[in-house]
Length: 71
Image (tube, rainbow, N blue to C red; front, side):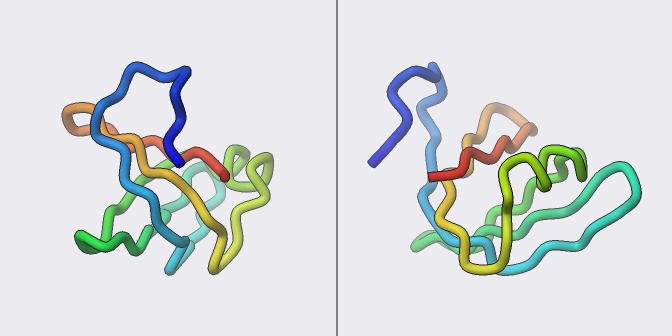
């Protein structure tokens, strides 16, 4: 499954392997079949997406930015 409503070609499905929470931003490591993809997103987004270890996600990569979508 991929997200069709977003115009990003580089979509990597995976599972959250590690979350390093900070006060404002958090680091999310996503394990994909092609390796680990790391995203730095706001801690508020981590909470709103209810991300936890093992969550199924899609890492959306555009240039040097990596976004996370909860599946």
